[in-house]
Amino acid sequence: MKKVFISFSSKNQQLAEKFLEFLQLGMGLRRRDVFCTAFPEKLQTGENFIETIRQQMQECDTVISLITAEYLQSPFCLVEMGAAWALCKQYFPLLTVKYEELDRTPLKGIQMRKLDEQEDLSVVYDELHRCKVLEDHSTAEFYRRTVEFVSYVKKWIAGDYVLHPDEEGYYETVIESVRELSQKQYRCYGIKGHLDNPPDGEQANSDWLFYWGNTFPDLVPGDRVRFKTSKSKVNVFQDLGRARNIYPDDLRKV
Image 1 (tube, rainbow, N blue to C red):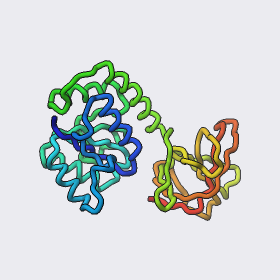
Image 2 (cartoon, rainbow, N blue to C red):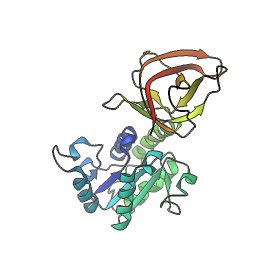
Image 3 (cartoon, helix red, strand yellow):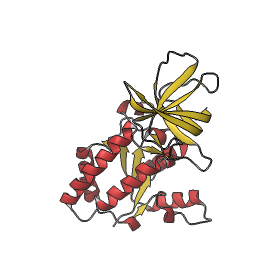
Image 4 (cartoon, rainbow, N blue to C red):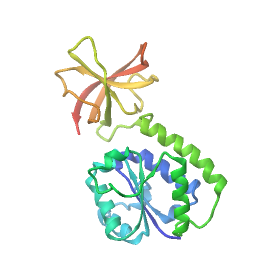
């Protein structure tokens, strides 16, 4: 069986892991035939990981890219994409962002498939068979797994996913909305995703950054931020339901 290289942003680790599960259980791709850094055993302790990735890219027949907002902002990911073209690999860009977000990228004009569309994933499944990446068909299992995976991706795109802190305790996410407050000295911003193990320990429908205006910079939808927090509180609002106020200890634009 031919080898497959999965290109993704390290900021989308959860999405990549779910996609790898779908490839194996839904499409029948064997783990040993996939190179993806989301598999911890693919990079050996002490080795030069950049050189390993370069070698694997050369040896693989097919490259699949998970095109997210984070992917488009990553120079490393864009280099992988360019290498796939330069090496004439069979290339499958799978999209989670809107088509217009590709207007100023090398991807404009390239045939895309949507990662959250069952019909598009069915086309990819057939194409992978035609180019001998996949050998066996299991149509019933593929369609069952596709329904589950598409449901997950739609929630992921909508922001219904968990934010995990990095080794320094910082979360990274995107600002989705601005909430106008009667007390103009405060700032309140809706974020994409939900905190893993929030300080308040409660469930909420949405998470919001809340702080005194002069403490941290003003933000707009689309801004990517890193923040650390040790305090949060869930309140109930008529329009939002249960919403979590996150009080950042530190916050910066990325």
